[in-house]
Image 1 (spheres, helix red, strand yellow):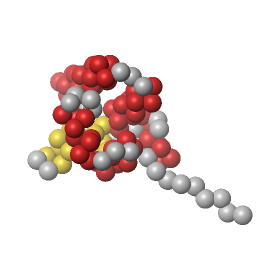
Image 2 (cartoon, rainbow, N blue to C red; image 1 turned 60 degrees about the horizontal axis):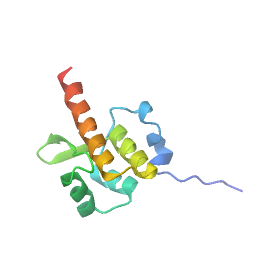
Image 3 (cartoon, one colour; image 1 turned 120 degrees about the horizontal axis):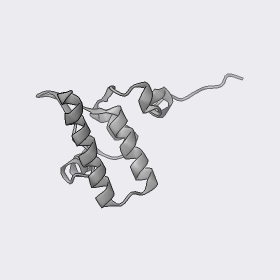
Image 4 (cartoon, one colour; image 1 turned 45 degrees about the vertical axis):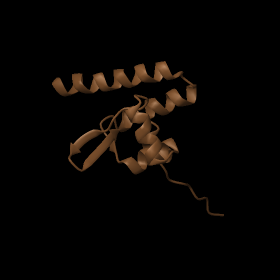
Length: 101
């Protein structure tokens, strides 16, 4: 009997942010990981409940895989909204520190 395996964000190595700390995900993958729609996702970004994308050009935005996984872990842990907003601020702050270095 042949055993089949599924592939997806968690089966393709995204479960270990340390293995690809600089990888960037397109919106469709972020939405698939979060299990929500585009409108809700951007509402969360506007409300400070999710980090904004890294703009690579005027028409290209991506999310760092490590940030996506940190946010998933926070959601699974049931962190309160205030804690999520602080986490988003810290993630954004870490981006500017990394870019300046």
